[in-house]
Image 1 (cartoon, chains in turn brown, orange):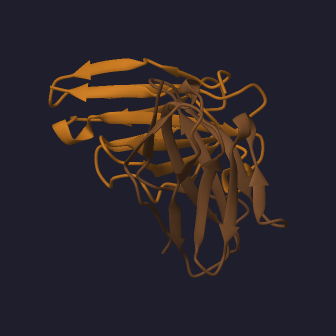
Image 2 (tube, rainbow over the protein chains, first blue to last red):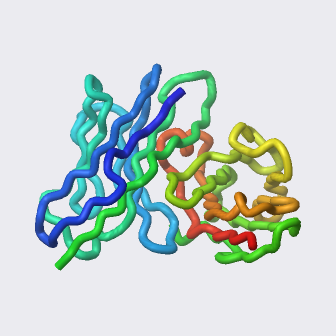
Length: 117
Length: 117
């Protein structure tokens, strides 16, 4: 079975500071990896995803993440955050194998990023 | 992702009543997923439907919960005889292809927030 652990439930930072949101996963098979952002009272929006290829993935709004297979991690980073980045961030995985053509996501518990002026 | 429409956005029910949540996928999408977000937790997969078919309901509670996606009209998530533990945000997502659920090509609605008194 696959599981996702987001190590920090809340991360407060000051504007223009760098930030890293941590995500570890466990799976016995190869996985696809995702980061989603959820603004208050809204649905989830895909920030970035890793399917294959380069382990450094760039997404929207200046975010990037690095897939580390040996450490089973997919940490999200941004070199300089803005007030508008305040939101909840979810890491998710899906199976990259199996006989089914469809898939479903397994989400972490979420990390609330609060950017202070 | 504003293309996935969910209603109602907020629903209050008393214990024992029925709750019906509706989801209209993005235009042209015939694959619908329902996820539940309990307080302080990440989203958990409930069910995956294609038009007129339930493909995977492995995340649905065995009793009181049902889902449908008829040939015409929105997908419906129905909860009978609601209990306080059903209070949560219910998110619908749609994809253009079956693989979208695996590769993250999902578009989420803004959610329906159910409160059971």
